[in-house]
Image (cartoon, rainbow, N blue to C red; front, side):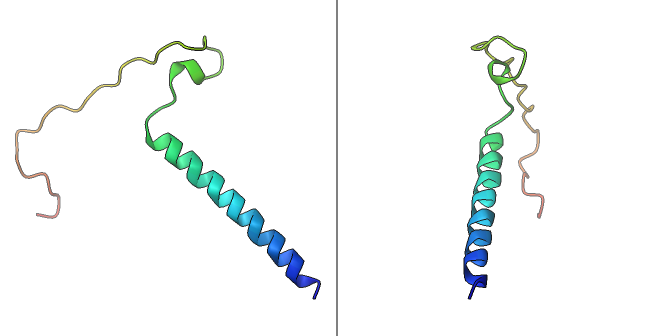
Length: 65
């Protein structure tokens, strides 16, 4: 019967760690960290603009076609 609290604690720990990993991935999916939030830079400094991809000359954009 002492096994149930240990399993519950392990499950909660795994759930919290998973949420932290998914939260980090979601935050990074929006793009790179701006210059104002990295160490050693002045807070509030805007990040350099990101390059945009060049338009494609083809209309076939589906790689499975």
